[in-house]
Image (cartoon, rainbow, N blue to C red; front, side, top):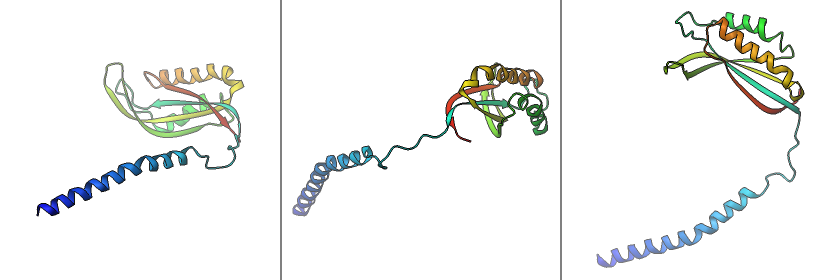
Length: 156
């Protein structure tokens, strides 16, 4: 029985030594594969320089009034957003949460509005975007409308 235990320990020690000796070579092979390009040429960059602005509109009213409906929001888009950005936009439904000014975490149905416009029009677009945010806050009693701007490339 002592002989079997010794053989087992020796076998485990030998297997461990072989595993540890081979591990650096295996990792080196994986690292080499990760650094090798998967395609022989660089990808083609398409499109022109654009700005992507995303606005996040909540629907619950802080004063406890009725939530903004789909019809009310789309009417707002037709009246306030489309005239300022007639070339196109995207509206997505969402679910969001944020901490209000009283420290309460509010969870609500929301809308995400995505605008794309050429970088050269960014300065001219800014006041229109800020007006959209201000009007929504006033019209629907919101504390804020979040804004996210990112450079991107677009090809239509």
